[in-house]
Length: 317
Image (cartoon, rainbow, N blue to C red; front, side):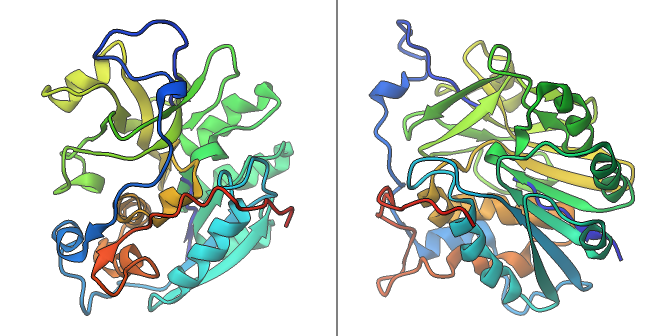
């Protein structure tokens, strides 16, 4: 049985911006969203009691050495957070890979979760990766997982996950705050039934290589009452915040958000990730919804965190 490859772009301008534009990064207040009442989160997850997967799902979580200041790009810490949560779901098993999976791990996997700065890989490793996706494997690519150097590798890499970084002179990155909405394409299966926009304080990338079968389903842009299709075209829109991609029999769900560690403790962000995971493995999202609340629900029924988590120290493995 094929396994799913879970894989999960914004720059702040230093020039003067119009009032409706996204604020420069120097003006942003970085920190988590306020915790939400559990009852409000349940309206978005829907009922999931007794929900079951239709089959066994073998997940492979790909991670690398932490490469940023504390509280950001915590690849190891996020792996340690989510692997036990995923393993707690009936019919889910999880394996781990450091830097790049072996062919044997690909052969066993239905789903690969990818959160790391991708290392340079060989032509044979590309073939293995592409064969995994085309053969029906699922991919969820998170944040810096879209970046692989040298840039000559970026074109081939985009064939695997749909989007990839095409260099600092072409692709763009930047932070965004709670005053700038993240718009969701709610007529897409992944985000159906969710609000048309949510608020986070994080970072993303855009202006990347994008394959024809990619559908952008998340865009960061100034406040607007327009439809998603119009917001996406706006001059200040930062696209490729979330996307879906199909290649052969496989599906990839990607996001360029997920810079800060506290973001993974946000119930809304967890909902988006769990929806993406479910879509990539062609399952209903309900069996994954317990993860939305796990470890971040307090005795007052509030879900989330107030901890900015900026005092973490990075680790190599």
